[in-house]
Amino acid sequence: MSEIDPSLAIPVGIIFLLLMLSAFFSGSETALTATSEARMHKLESDGNARAVRVNALIRDRERLLGSILLGNNLVNILATSLATSVFISIFGATGLANAIATMTMTVLVLIFSEVAPKTAAIARPDGFAMVVAPIMRWVVFVFAPITRVVQLIVRGVFHIFGLDVSKDSAVFSVAEELRGAIDLHHSEGRVDKEARDLIRGALELHEIRIEEIMVHRKSIEMLDLDKSNQEIIQQAMKSGHTRLPLFRDNPDNIVGVLHAKDLLRCLWEADGKPDRVDLESIARTPYFAPETTTLQEQLDVFRIKQEHFALVVDEYGAIMGLVTMEDILEEVVGEIEDEYDSPVQGVRPQADGSLNVDGDVTIRDLNRAMDWNLPDDEAVTVAGLIIHEGQCIPDIGQTFSFHGFRFRILRRRRNQITAVKITTIPTPAT
Image (cartoon, rainbow, N blue to C red):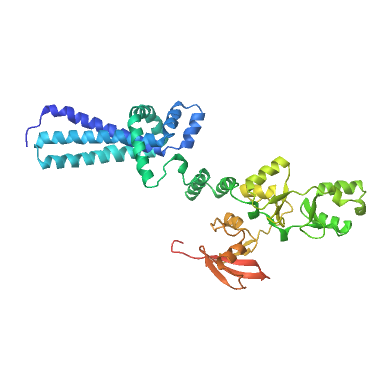
């Protein structure tokens, strides 16, 4: 071992300077990739100049990461080379000098240039990103020609293996990303269930079709024009709905929609005499909507046509059900109950922790009420889900187990499941 040369202070100082630069690059990488693009956009719209610089950098993350990694590797390799020369000057040109240099630089880089700056950056990514953005802007500018060549080489290699890394190749949509974020915050307790359901409902309007939320035709109150005016008006007055479809001969032949206000106005003009009321003349023109229409499309149509009521038809023109603006809004804000709504929702909790559920309860409503995740891709109602999974029309007392729940058939009317008992299947986690 030779004597320590005082002139080694300069390369040692350079090594520590390079380690600081390495820490800067590592912290910048973590902060600029972890910072919230939404928060930066909000700060930029508020006039924050530093947020403008951050957004300019993260707009092209591929070039940014290329510049950071290039700079980080350069300073790390240079620092390691200088450290090796310093230890060779101290211990001589032996394998021991190389081993000590490698071990020392590994420890220093790991602790002070990787873990420490990245920990600090991940704790406050937004603030850290706005601090380093002005410097990183010049780093990216200087390294731009090199990073561009690197990008072309990387994309060429990926293209050979059939991988698409373009910006348009993202697997998840923005809506899926937002749903995942809100579910994560809900599981962490930072967002309550009502707020989560509200946001998810708004995001899913483009995906849900009206056939999934419509009132089925067997539950629609209709007025038969072949009956006397006295009977029709009595039925209309007993109804809790303000709009009632009018049909002649058969329920598929809808000739109009009777509005309660129009009926009352006409009765007033007729001095309360039903026989003097021409129901068909005061009926409004019915509006029909295909069952495949999405909730967002239907909501837009309601707003444009100033309608609140649509009859849902299948591809053959047969009446499948009806949907109202209130039905669509309930998918966002939850159940809207008025003085005519029935308090019975079809979901009845039992003392043993199970649920007695009507077969026509929709899976979406059940999931929302119980915070479950039963699939609704292949079926709309609980009865439909059981038939789809069981591949049969079950008998009373028959039991099925799927998706973490046990379904026992309580009642059946002809081929229709009318009541089911649902029990959660215990798991080791629960």
